[in-house]
Image: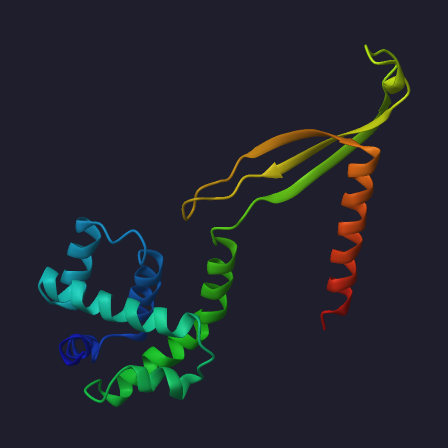
Amino acid sequence: GRAATMALTSLAGKEEKVIQRLLLDSFRYRLDGMSESKLMLWSEELEVKVEGAKEVIAELQNVIGKTLYRELDRNGIARLLGKETPKELKITLANSISEFLPRWREHCMQNQVSPPKLVDFDWRVDVASSSNVLSRMRVPTVFVEMTIQKDSTHHRQMAGTETVQFELSKEALGTLVKSLGKIRDQLANVK
């Protein structure tokens, strides 16, 4: 909105290094929020009240959020800043955001909440040598052990591992192998 964009005008005339530090902090604290002491430091640095610093940071976080998932060049980023933002400030912000974007995107990709991933896989074949039922005397079974990395449920949470063990009959193994073959074929056809 207009009020938020007007907040950016308090950055006019500030050194590029100060603006870049503020952009980096705005990105760093976009999910968890900035501490009161950090806000006080930025309030003093920008020579605005704490509420004014919050508005500036919120607007920068809004612009950062819009640029992270879009393919915007410097001009596209500058257009996000609104007409009220002074030209020199637009140029500084657009250039700085454009410079930081590759690193920010990489950081976002590394910290995504993701489904479980296969870490390790082991198996062995056993043949049942004793049973109450005579017809099942020599039935081969496959024991499979998979170690998976559990899904991360929170941003910046380290996911642990879990071991899953299961047994497959010869028929169940055949069905599994057939299904995995279909998956492989589909993936091979993806261009």
